[in-house]
Length: 121
Image (cartoon, rainbow, N blue to C red; front, top):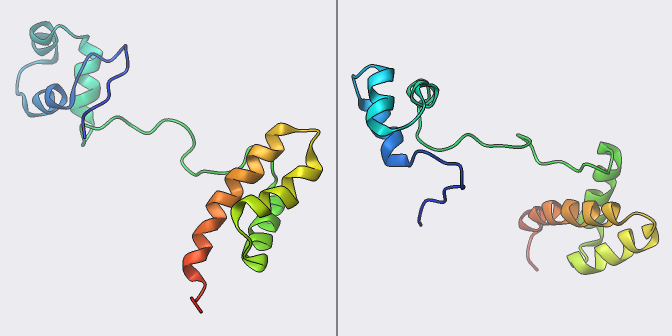
């Protein structure tokens, strides 16, 4: 699988690895590679060459409270209905807020991992 670089990226995994292995001064290396000294310093401090994860560390609903999310998961686990049916039963009555529908859908998808805990008949 190839490496995806955003439009502002100035380094690749190979360049980051080179930065981490190099014994040259930050200023000399930045001139040689044509990148900012701060970029060289940043990649020297990191242990890995992959970009740091952006966004929340733990996936969670932004519109449902933890109690509401737990209720959705419990409903899914108790009824064992397919995701589409759960979505219809939970989200359709809440038409005033489309974010709630999306949030319920995302919660149901996360709850689908519980299918692996259910013994097959």
